[in-house]
Every structure is written in C-alpha cells, then in structure tokens.
Length: 435
Image (tube, rainbow, N blue to C red; front, side, top):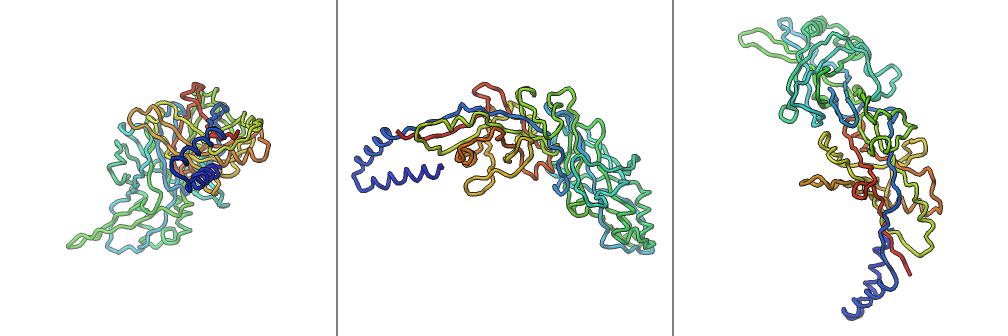
C-alpha cells in the first residue's frame, strides 16, 4: 500500500507541472491541507511470549559446538559434538615405516560464547554408536550417542579462537598403533569405508565441568585426524595420513540448558507459550535450543471499526533488546518471522508484497547502547489481514533468528517487554485519512 501512496503523490506533482512553480506549490499545499491528514497510530497492543520448540535439527550447520557457559537469563548452556571420519586417500604402509603419533586437528570457527579468559577442557572420546542410525533418521539438539567414558585424548588450555587457527589434541597411541597395524596388514576395517565405520564409529567432543565458554570448530574437511609416521633413512622421511570429517549428514551438536531457579525454567513444550509477564517482562530467542518468541496483536481488529476513508501506507514493528543483554552474547544481526497457529507451529515465512522474506533491521547505538532496536516492516502482513474484513483472534507471528543460526549457533536475544512507553514493543501504523 505504501507504493500506492507514493504513486498518488507523484501523480499530484506531475499534474502540477504545467503551471507556474509558485502556483503549483500553493495548490499542492492547499490540497493536502484541505483534503487529507496523516496520522501515526501506535496504541495497539503487542503481546510477547516465549516458546520452546520441541527439537531443532543440528546436522549440516557448519559448526561443531563444545563446552558450556552461564547465561543470566537462559541458564547453564552446554554443548557437545558428534562426528565420524572418512578413510585417507593413501592406505599403503611401507615395510620400513614406523608410527609416530595420532593428532586430532580442530579448526576454530568464529563463534564463542562465555568467558574464554579461563582455562577450557576439551575431551575427545570414541563413539560406541554410529552418528547416523540405520534408518537414516534426522538428528536434533536433543539427540545423543553413547561413547567410551575413557577419553582418547584431552587438552586444557586458555583458548584463543580469534588468534589461533586450530586446536590440536594428541590421541592415545594405543589407537594410533592399532590404525597403523591394520593399515599395514591391509585389514578391511582400515581399507573399506563401510567396514571402517563399523569398526570406528567416530568421535564425541565434550567440555569439562569447570568450563566457562562454548567454543566452535569448523565442520568441514579441514577437521582431521592425522596419523604421523616416518621412514628411517639417511634423510628421515616424514609421512602423514589424514582421516577427515565425513559428509554434512555425519555430524551434529547436542545442546541442553539447565534453567532451574530462573523464570525461563517455565519453557517446557512447544504448545505452551509463556507470557512475558511470567518471565520478568522479557521474551527470549535462542539458537541451538530452539527458543523462539511469539508476537500477538490482540486489538488489531479495532482497525476494522474505522468509518472514515483512509489508507494505511506503512506498518512498522519496533522491538528493543533488554538493556545490557548484549553484554553476554552480541545481538543477532537479523530476525525473521513465521506465520503460526494457536499450537505455535511454524507454518510459513512471512513475505512482503514482492514475495521476499521479511527480515528485521538492527539499529545499534554504538556510543551509548541505550537506543538499540529492531525495525520490521509488517505493511503487507497487516494489509493482508485487514483486507479480509476479519482478524483471527489466534493471529500471531513467530519471531526467530534465521534457520542456519538456529541450527549451528547459540545466538540469542532477550527482548524488552516492559510496559513503559520508551521500552515497550510498538506497532506503528502510518495512515493517510481522506476528508
């Protein structure tokens, strides 16, 4: 509808181009003053609720998440990763070759949550169950796999993910020598891909109890398990064989949170939306755990009572992060919306009049951080609802971070739902009224 409004103004201007400039200016001014008036309506209720999605797929996200951190609003968040490996391209072992070591090489990704100034413990364990089950079922944030409680390797370090490229963990030589012997004997378990996955199902990465941060590692072929060997000669010849991460379906993250003693502990099931007044006037979004916010417009139907000629040319939703909540985890760059029903199912993405997905714009106050807010254009959504002459009382929207961030991050947002005018969520409707 805002395009129609712009077209109307352009027609008025074009019509006036055949007259003297002074007369044109006077005519437009008089016409607008006498025939129309503009108004901003921002008193319609916006209700926020928080919902725990039953499960979130976490395979194929591009990141492995490991460790734990304390979130003042969403509790103790823990993450562990599960993945399998592929065989090296070079399977032959020279008769004079000798084993040296087996090292897990984890390339750092950019995501970090929590306090990395403290020492972090990362443990690599041998999986006792396959990453992908026999029925090829999807894996979720709630999925786990059994692993050997005796670690294959571990390391405790003060991590520097933004300075270092990789984290290396020395793996037990007993496994390394076992690999080496099987390769040398041309055993099917180290020469045939299917037999290898039956024999060595993969690795689990977990964090120690005292960890204060969640680290992320790239889930691609740069993640490797490298066997180092050498051949003794006049010049010592060093050799390596690389077991790399498998396909995108062969890894996933398990993410859980302990929210006891916090208002967020009320988040249990997808069908139960928790109103913001029950969570200290806050609404939550959290990737990895599948926490999303529901937005309701309970008084929107009042717009149908207007008995004047009018045209809505823009609708804008303003949401503000809770003050200082970005000190824990940076604010998400973008948010998106889904249509939903009374059961909080995600039905379809909200789109604009050009069928493009509606996303938010983040306005960040770099200097004072007191006026951060998200702006979301809901013009087409509101216009479509009003055009039917009926507003469904179950009308609502699900607000979340983009799909890729839900699956492979623990990005989160705490939305301010207090009732004060400078904090509250606001639906701004821009109208032109005709006399």
